Image (cartoon, rainbow, N blue to C red; front, top):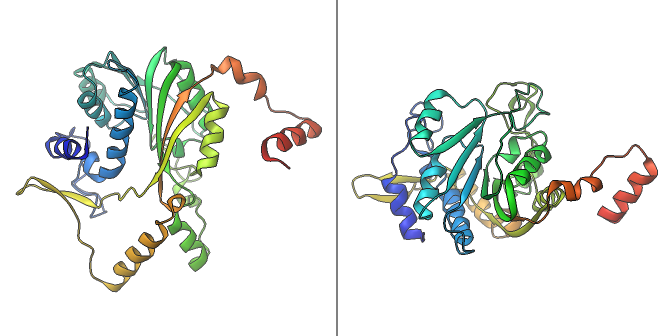
Length: 313
């Protein structure tokens, strides 16, 4: 799927009824479906899926973790000729969503994927094996314990299969600007964290650098194959229904908006200062092959040895 075909897909996409929030307080989000809100992010995902397809994976078994609102089912079906199985993992999946997904032969599993969350729900077995692709899109930043979820994914995939991750970048240039200008932390504000809300819609827990993501992946048996930083430009695009085109919103010509865009675009010249990651990883080990090297220790001497071997000091 090249850029032209992706644009056609987004223009012609028929969103699920729960995808559009016409009452959203954010003007650049209100009334838009998920593919146009996150136009760039999902285009990046489509490129990575095409890359996987070139690995002679024509009829994949796909696992979608954090699957709501279900839009990736449609993009995946547009890329692959035939999907052998598609499983959607999520928390608090309502009956309407589950019934709709059945129309697309999607197996939904409503389960906890983060048992360390303060108000964790019931964990149900996924009972999924030998899958070819896993999608973990803008989900890992919500998890208190990413390793639990990555291990479950590992157990669901065959060796040599692929994992795609998208998530926010903690080394985002705009965070650095705010730290310099106002002393603001890049960490999630407590009012937006589980300190305040412990319901089923999980708030952000933390964001990651590339180095941290690579460490977590290797710890759960994955090898990082490809990584890109990108500017997600969330909410920057809209569909011109009269001309049947996707266009970018014009910048409001107020001086503060012009300065903001200038600062952002200047900082984003340096790749690792952009605001989002996309990762392609490959499963190279089963969990039982690496568990012996991950046991926490109570020994300070052993800890210092692990630290030295891992961090060099």
